[in-house]
Length: 480
Image (cartoon, rainbow, N blue to C red; front, top):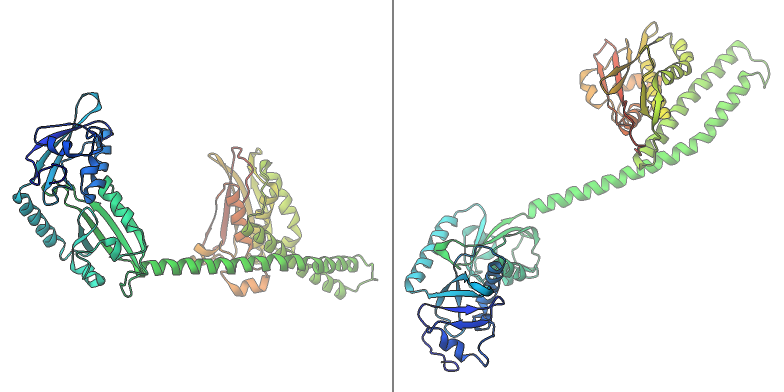
């Protein structure tokens, strides 16, 4: 006996606690334990009388009861009677006091626990995931064949926290035992677990709260996810490497575009001097050479502009300043600027605009760039004698702009990729007419930045119709 407390555990009875779990009274069967406590017995926490393995469970259940949660019966062990388990049932009484009904569990309960454990073993023996059965202190009682194959054959009888050291399982197991809140651990690093090639595990830990297994313990589901984690890390590493390469490309494009502008300005300027006769009179053949220089310079200038815009779009530094715009006026201005190219290509350009000017919401410079890209693309791939039609019509709450040609068209397999950067549906034709394959990609980014949509309808040999939309309702200025 301890301090006058009998060695034999008392029969069923109850103890009365205050709201903080301190002794306030007891039934006659339990009064000797109360009287054996160091003075004063009244007012001492009941948790001090429990075995170490029951204390966390007791505190968790008492707190849950205090919150008004429904607490099922559970098992506890007193330090004075380590060989006897008691089923505890909490009941609320007046003035915030708690009555704890205590019933010692006979050997039949041990037999039932053994049967429950046997059922769980049979159930989980061939489970596809690893299964670990533990008591409430996290000590392993049994592992199935999957866990044994992972290297856990010798875990029974040892704490799971010691079987998988260095990952903080002790605190997690104690929290699950105390609160009954499941814990899910994904990709858990187990470098010191001695599991051979296994370095990462998924664990799902929960407490068994079935009435037939009151206070039984914990169950953990285990899966080897080393291959998955390695694949995820590989993808992340490849994505980071890809991002670095894309960044280098963007920096190169930006730098090269800026460096090309100065010599292009010189070429264009001197070509204009020659055309104006500042270097002397030119023969017809010399004038033809000058016009060739100017045509090449314009193509290169367009490529440089596309490269610079693309670089800004990649960096997120391209600013769109949206306000109310008159799209029909922008269409007429772009058509006028490309009229000379149309005559050179012997392609007729016509427009079909709404009878009234319908204002849209967008960036006028960006809309002009989009039209330049679509019209320039149509001029490249429309043969001499062909025609290009530009239409502007209102549809619902948007403005639809279409650029349709009767040129060579686009094969169906190229249509899904036509707006991708550097994509060229027909490299032979592109080399013939020039271009870096960025115009349509820049156009798509500019349309998207203005909250519009862009697309194309085309068939090989039957021409193409590129279209994009702009909103009619005002929207705040947007940074692409």
